Length: 116
Length: 113
Image (cartoon, rainbow over all chains, first blue to last red; front, side):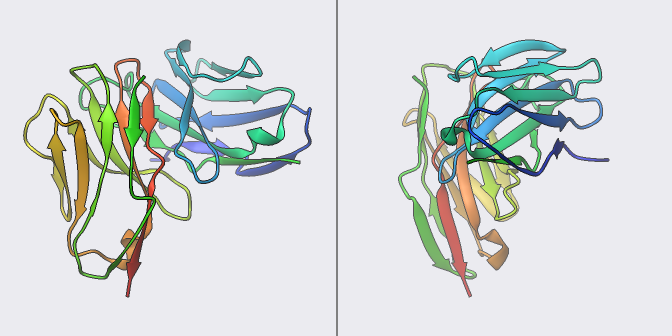
């Protein structure tokens, strides 16, 4: 079975531009979460979607938005890019909501975003 | 605020030795999950071990084991018979009831031949 897949793997954008990152969860997984990992830091929670509804949002500005589609794949959008948005963006999927007992969370390999 | 603290930014140990990575956390919740994740240079986050807070027994996975002290809010990872492939960043993480995983800043572990 395929794991969590993310695209693109690397991209470079200019300040002020917009970017869309994509995530396909493991087949059958209904929960998708997004994390931002700045170089040298641990990942920071951005969003969680479960059954196509937003279930949680981290401390990120409104320039960050996301959605989950009927097939449970997800997109993360970032508008008006800043240099500080340069980071690895990780997607995680799980069968149930993350905090369900015995629910394993799987991470993708991430999308490297560089803003110049 | 819920926080995870890893006090060792970087560690080195000889191959085949045992190493312990420290982690403390802060929460007012009673039921939660704790994890250790490994992030090699490929950057994919790999689950090493998981501990449910309601279980008193420490989790083990082959060469990896934890020392979970709930009252002290401490969750250390012990790697026995360390191997070169264990070289990576290790993140301690806490999953709260809102489904957010809160990560520490990580410990960079070098296994020396």
